[in-house]
Amino acid sequence: MKIGVPKEIKTHEYRVGLTPASVREYVAAGHQVVVETNAGGGIGAADEDYVRAGATIAASASEVFAAAEMIVKVKEPQPSEWPLLRDGQILFTYLHLAAEPELAKALIGSGCTAVAYETVTDARGGLPLLAPMSEVAGRLAIEAAAFAMRRSAGGRGLLVGGVPGVPAARVVVIGGGVVGIHAARMAVGLGAEVTVIDRSLPRLRELEELFGGRVRTRFSTIAAVEEEIAAADVVVGAVLVPGASAPKLVTRAMLASMRRGAVVVDVAIDQGGCFETSHPTTHADPTFEVDGVIHYCVANMPGAVPLTSSHALNNATLPFGLALARRGVTAMKADSHLAAGLNVFRGRLTHRAVAESLDLPFSAIEGIAA
Image (cartoon, rainbow, N blue to C red):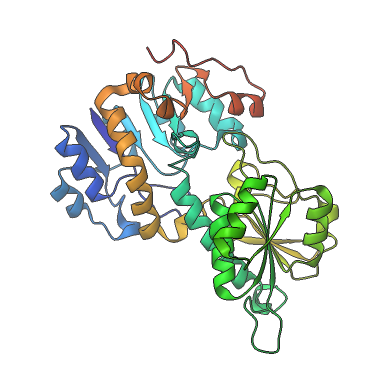
């Protein structure tokens, strides 16, 4: 199969769909790879590195899309890329369609087969292709909050870890999944007072054991969220419903109880966000203020550390990408976990949560990937 790797064009997105090491694996498996010139520039990978790995270099994205049977990206196709997709072509990337109705319609209209990293599953019920970026985003969330809390950035002027004689910041993490765990780990490491809120008692027990009592845990109720937010200096939204829009767990009325200059980081923004006041921002202009509360809502947070992120992502996606390259759409007949990633197939939405979030017809996967 011919694999295409276009350069990412989302604002301040420096990751790349395939590193030179991954290209070498595809070529060794008998596939051809065409890479857009400077696609790897954000991670310090020159065109020559890709050529040495066995790829050919294309001068433009249009050449890559025209030549490739499967496109491997990081972020969802941008509007200028929508017309480049075609019937029968496989798209393998993050999509987050529940928050992107126009993209969903464009993919449906293109006739392509769109497989979303974020809904591929594993035998333990996890999301193996989302997990590495969730790890990065969780850790970055605390770094972003620490910067936003500086007085020069509009924040309260509070140091996350405090100093002897001065209290540390109070950090509340809503959601005890991968993002939440890594956000809590970073916050604890900096010396913050940390509370994690989740609806799963087994997960709360795991967190108690994992952190050895260094974090407080609370079962998620409206009252608990209200109480914790009112006392927080930083709130990290780390809620995920696979494929679906994130629930709005924090209302504007709740935020009104926070101190001026407090910070919220909405890591769920690529699924619509879990704060009522959130809207997507970019690395070029990452924050905005609502009722005195600083909001950080960058939808591609891991793009800020592309070297780490690209390699972590490639480590996870490579086996699935090679399976798609080897067998095409039929790979999903043999692997139900890969099949869970199928969001769009020949003009139909094939992921129930996405379809329900967008209020569009759902087509069962049975019999589609034949």
